[in-house]
Length: 496
Image (cartoon, rainbow, N blue to C red; front, side, top):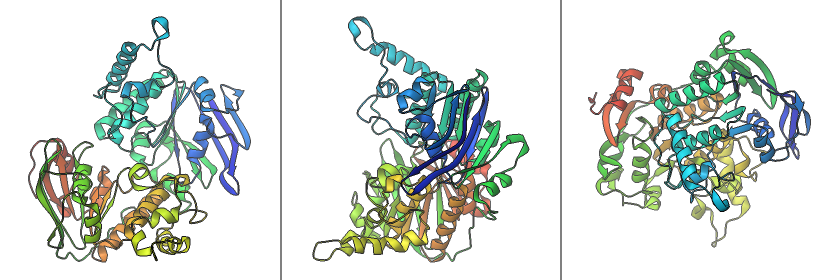
């Protein structure tokens, strides 16, 4: 159906793709894996018509093609769901799905009833409940991803490329997506599935291609390979430990949350984070975990309850006071809430400490670079220079920039929401090692994660939320996939 051979792409002196090769067949789901920066996204953007290749061959149904726009790629029957949603926030869900191809009725007027009816049918097929009339603004990442999937399915594309589509979906939503993907495969379509989650790759895909450092490494039937084989091919070495959790001395409470309540969002939330402790906040998407974190930090309001840091009460809706008190928040949506995409790495990493860098009200580039260099080096941010635009970095490196920005404030408590969402296995191990190291130095960490292996591998305690309430508190020694998922899916849970 689609074949790329030795495709190359450079941006000035930066080589994004050295030798990309891929062969997608009808009636097959093909996985594409590799570390962030391996060239996967560049390859996809060439297929989608966003970039033109510098060299190499691209064939669709045996015919050589050279897409100069995304419209040409779509017209040829290719649909791409990107890792980060790209919706128009002021338009409705239905309008987003049919943007640029609205059906018309008499006198050429847009047939809104037909659009809405088809949108409802799409969501029914995907097994999700989303109001087609609601504005896209304020939707969770999970809902935004589902809308992107519905948009792609509605195009009836023969080649469907899914770039991390499950990164923010719950287990039930992933199962529904996989059912749709398999039905599309059985209809004879070719699917490309890009994911860092090996369990999903082995559950869904028929074939897997590995890329490393902008080049093709190998293609193997999924039945003939293992996770260890794929990791070794991806990183060029053995990754011995994905969850390098080391014991830390647990000290006094640093963050105390009592009875936090916001009607319709979360109710009576109480917990403590102690020095040297990593506490995981687990639960399904929509349980209210991110909303609690944002309220604690002061971004969102709450009606009752209290937040104390180091024994001192923290004012409501005052992120500036939270920062001064030693609290830091790495948000789930790094692109919209964590980064200024058009600004440099140095500017992003020095954003929160700008007042400390200013002299006579002015901040020099040298001061920004000096402040950013420390964490860029320590976190091993892969960028050509500190003046590199943050929006051009891979997802894993963007996450490192956001993390560095907050660690530069020298917090006593770090709240980190989905710390490894959408990043590769090598970078995951680096982030986990850093969190363990920070806890070892006495920092308190609240880690919100939808990945059970991460929760079980890194947490000293697990707090489980369901429908805005904490349903269980489980010590590390007692935490299992079964009891965490039971607490996340049942109305009542026991404290352990």
